[in-house]
Image 1 (cartoon, rainbow, N blue to C red):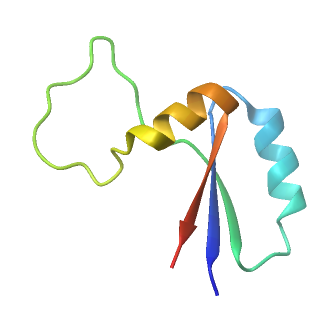
Image 2 (cartoon, rainbow, N blue to C red):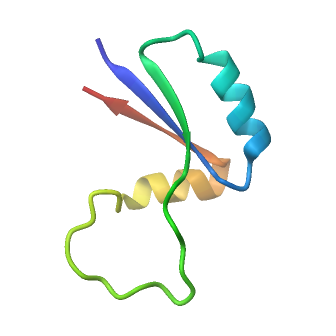
Length: 71
């Protein structure tokens, strides 16, 4: 069965709290705040980054959250 990871923008704590309460009893869902640190200007690229997924970045910027389906 698939599991779902909700990544919520760290600027939207209210949404995080709503989703965390909603999925608190669901063993197939996890809600987390976006832990990535943004830097201005961006840090130089130093190799593969497992958390570098442009589509997730776009979703978080546009909707304040992204859903990742885990195997």
